[in-house]
Length: 385
Image (cartoon, rainbow, N blue to C red; front, side, top):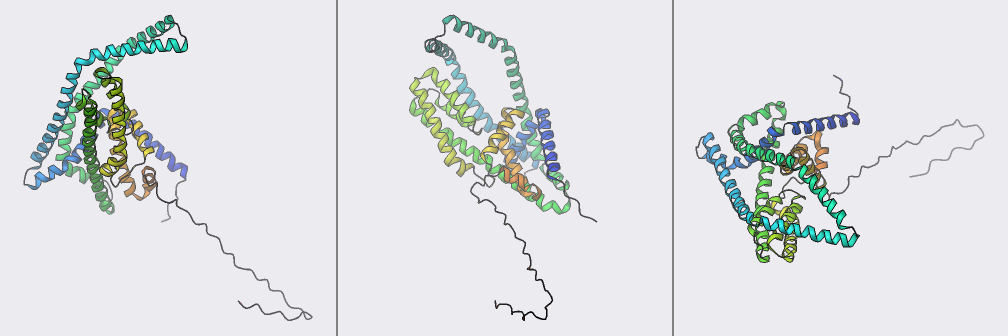
């Protein structure tokens, strides 16, 4: 049987691009189904260890999965209760925030008038125009907020159910993936699935440890500065820190804005300094030591992945981007035909560049023999080598 002719590069590239576009389109259209399933998949990987522990103690799988999910829900409920209680106490300072923002806008208006010599009438006209445009979009903003809250409530119901079912039927899912490939690929499928589980578990566990340490450092710095809502701001900043490269800016703006209502400008500046110092410690010490695993993804792909995840799935996509890329890195490294994509995702910046040796073709020396003539002297013997 003749060997298959290799496809040209542009054909392979077009197939890859078409597949990527179709996958992204499918993810965008089916986000209401895929987002809770994705979170449930991550949570089920985390809860496999306690579930296996209970099953080894002769507990039925149904009961072990239910207890694992219940314990997980209790921990999440405690965290949400703490944050919500802090937010309720912050409601008393919301009027102060509005008054201080109005005063800040008034000071900014006066500064612009003095700096750029703009009349008060033009500034008033501009502010009225901006206010009317803002009010015209209020209905759509309220509709978007209600839609987001309803989706969050639906996810809070669906994710625990999906997590319980994934834990209950994880054996069926494993056999499905094994039977989906030829028998000779069974060891490779087992290896990739085991490595994926290990990478996700170590990543999520390291992320939780990192979040706790960052929250403690944030709260300690805020308490030293005398920030009123130190606990709330420290925990919220640690949660936002889970979003790579974007969360630190959001946490900084939010913390400074809330601190502005109850503290002096010097304290507001101190809050920004604390967050920046903690972020530097986290990026250079905690992240490589605690969260670092065998799968390393470079910063460029991380930023692009977070932006793409935000464009497709919003805030949920920003949180899920890194675990998804870690799973893809494991698959790309395990499948030989996908190694190039694994190199693209990797962070092997210290490796030496691959130098392809240039082979020179050795052309044998051509010796031309001519017939000797009668008057010619005898040929000299070849020189000794």
